[in-house]
Length: 246
Length: 255
Image 1 (cartoon, rainbow over the protein chains, first blue to last red):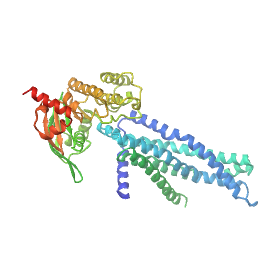
Image 2 (cartoon, rainbow over the protein chains, first blue to last red; image 1 turned 180 degrees about the horizontal axis):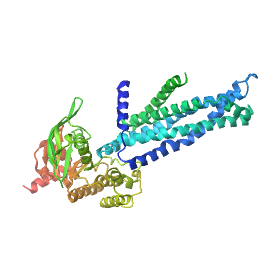
Image 3 (tube, each protein chain N blue to C red; image 1 turned 90 degrees about the horizontal axis):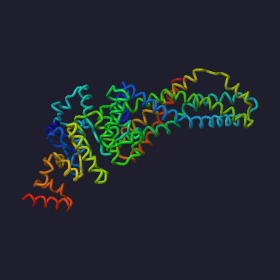
């Protein structure tokens, strides 16, 4: 199957996904379950990575700014920009593509190979709508909070790294954070997050739903899903940056 | 009653079903038998609407399934119960949630009414004290019982089973066979079973359809299968020495 066919099949899948749920109460239960699985259970890894990467960004910036003419406040400013513009939305989304993407593909793929999806179809249930729509809504609504948390912890990690290492003072860092603050950068980060969240939920769902074979095929599909989601995040990141910031 | 007329189904250039016609009656357990690759699963999946036939018709009590409107199809779906080969229970749900799922999707019953119905069908399949267990915590036989309970919870008019005994020990297989037969007779369900299990054929085969290379090679009851001189059936059903001896003894006795 060539790439164009995959794109067509993916679009047709979305056509089935975006239909009114058959039973609101069943949909609500599935949504809460997916918020728990895809969002809440990702909190730990995002908090951990954001905190330490924020620290590393601040340390690297401080270590590479040796010129005495450059003020230390620039460290906070550069760390803030790096974290808000790229680290939190893009880097965290790539991490989530690995963690959540493989979970989505393997769970839906296993349902496919064990005939659970056939069971849904026999009952007269739109299986794509039932399985994929709650995942899209869960990620699109929850990931902005997750990414905001990543930003806050990243910036805090930078501050703590500076204070503990003595490379810069906490006051300089905070002044740098506050200087030239542009709210649009947050809007830009949120737009990227929403697009990436959509990709993280739909691309692995596509790979899982159309898997053929047994457990080995599910494993391969999970790997492919993570690779393709990452590739699409990187490509869409480029185009979104081009469109929104230039 | 399910009436199948001249059913054809292929995938690409491979023709799997080549004009099958037969009838399945309510209150009877009808068995589809045949070698692997004979088209049994494709036939069953065509009956339940997972495959669309290329030509031919399948009518359910006079209603042809390819002519259904969206609403008629929705109603028809709710009249169908299906037991899959691997049970196809939802891993992430408990036994109770699995059985309750069709009720939640298609009825407006209260939680208590649904729970009462779930407990009733679980009791009917002799599965008690397993409500809160997950499928992975159950044995193969218990999983099959849950699958049967889920299939009958909506009071289906038609029950389809794809190799319900695969992976089960002979004793449990007989229990499952008897359970399906009892439920079929009790609720006057039209039951169609795909099987390789010759014990099932001899035990519950009110009607047996033998498929070979996508065509109906023979049709009859479990009593007729002893007497048939259809070579393909004899070769398939009596492939083991034990069954050959049983058949010979039966023929000698009835001479």
